[in-house]
Amino acid sequence: MTSADHQPPARAFVAVIIANVALAFGPWFVRLADTGPVASAFWRITLAAPLLVAMALATGWRPAGLSRGLWATLALAGTCFAADLASWHLGILKTTLANATLFGNSATLIFPVYGFIAARALPSRMQAVALLLAAIGGALLMGQSYQVNPRNLGGDLLCLLAGILYAVYFIGMARARATMAPLPALALSTLASIAPLLLFAVLLGERIVPSHWGPLIALALASQVLGQGLMIYALGRLSPLIVGIALLVQPVVAATVGWIVYDERLGLPDLLGAALVAAALVLVRRGR
Image 1: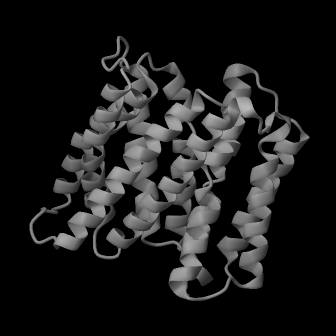
Image 2: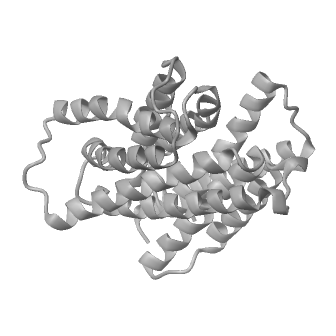
């Protein structure tokens, strides 16, 4: 196990929390956008790409000297991320928001399992307890609105696929981060996502060009530049367990946004779930 498993760096830990807070506003901006769901994902990527490339170049990075394997890894990660966004945005419209959040964050369990397999080690007792608390907390965050029924099956499967693709994206970006700085890695994977998302949106016959750019600009800045930027930074410094559990910050923030904007009241299961997620984060922050 790496040192990140014993004492996570404070700066990276704060970064992954802020990243998930920013990402939690994404579904709200998607609903406010007047384009199709996949088209909104296309604009999230396309509007953010020039800024990310400029920021990467400003750090002194240049694309020369990258190996073919690294290019392939970044291209695969970007394609998986595009498919993740397309699946999740479509699923949001075909199931409940609670189910979409639950299945879309299945990387909470998948990515930590990958980390233990890659390290060829079993989780310690404290790590296992933290993962269990996070799983229970994530389920409770769905509250009374959690349901699985035939009407939502298509949307549930799309969101579950999105969660699996998100975990694959994390794995690819974690490998890239082993040899690259966060901004160049995110910039190149973002560029690789543009064409697939545009193709998906066109094939689905969605409205591409919006009348109002505000929600899409906010989506690009909050979710892709700030959210994914800090997430990719944290990937190179924190264990998969910590990153996976931190994903459950998103349902907590999303529930709060729903309460403030849509008057979706928080019940006892939501509050208890948030407390369990917080306890899991405290455990993994303290290490073994």
